[in-house]
Length: 454
Ligand code: ADP
Ligand code: MG
Image 1: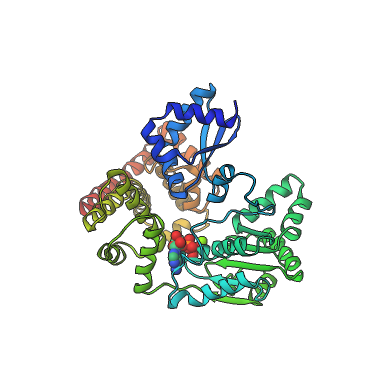
Image 2: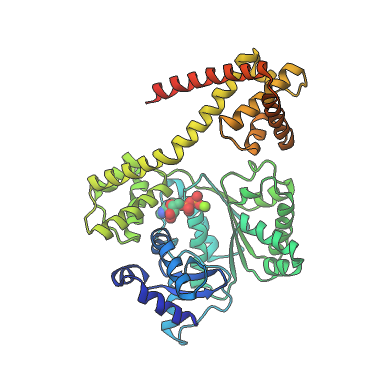
């Protein structure tokens, strides 16, 4: 079955309105044994479809193909999704190495005091690659670093179509490295990163903290490109100097170029950013809604963007205009949902773990330090064994997590737990009473906790 045939069949089995609303840009890109890769021409729609229709599409495809497959959705930027229709007249970029998010451009980046230097240095580098080399952009999360990297990429693709631009996160770089090592394809790897690139954009370089081998490889990649006059741009959540455990030779490479900061934008800039984000998703937001969003809800830009996307879908699905009331409702339902599920569970787990610990310490009349000390004194090691046993049976913790918490290795913890179990089944009444006492203490404490919490 060809990709087009499969798409036709899928279409015939999905509700017509749903298809028209969400799937018009869908293309089947690849039919594999266990996965079918579907390209969607809009990033938000892609995420939405994956969330809302992922299992429906997977099931329908499995029916059609008579084998179990999972649908995997991927974003195909506009130039690729329209390429097919536009025909051979459109000039293709033969050297394209990376896809850039078409929404992250210099145009859509709002410039304020806090990010002006970073913005203009990125623009300068995009216009004159090699002039300020390397460019190192640092700043906290969600302040627009990735946006700027993609803006450089988009700008170069448009204005210097012959340059080969590669964007990688440090994590992808490392994974690629590991895979190449495993498959003994290091020659290809080096060819890819050292010879086939004119401009290298590396995002979130702090990921390589503690990853010595990847740092070493990056160092050589850096030197090769640098010596050839190729532009390198690096983003990080901290300054070169603060990448403390990085190899000094790599830090000094980072410091030899332009080092610029993106800082938290002021309120006025944030308002403009929120407006821009809404505009990008064709959502009209009145001024009072925008300031309500920024002032009362969230000024983390990434979450703000998420909220705006949710508002966009909400208004698209319900046909309602967005006002402060809608924002408030949507936000509180998102927040409550979050609170109800993972947070409480996690908090309860942590609470319980600590209550059990406190109860054991009390029973044995020890301090935390004594309990966690490496000593093998009989009393103390028995307390540790009981703690492990109780965390497993009453705290419902995994041995792996207990081992982390208690600071002993996996097999020591397993043995401790088995030892206590054996004592109990062997009828050790003294031990049983002790455990019962500890249990009473922590269950009592737990009751008090839950009463004060609610
Ligand atoms: P970082 O990489 O620094 O963690 P991102 O580049 O992912 O942050 O930015 C988070 C979100 O905020 C993105 O959607 C980005 O487009 C947006 N954003 C951040 N700063 C700006 C800005 N100055 N103008 C427009 N959008 C911005
Ligand atoms: Mg980023």
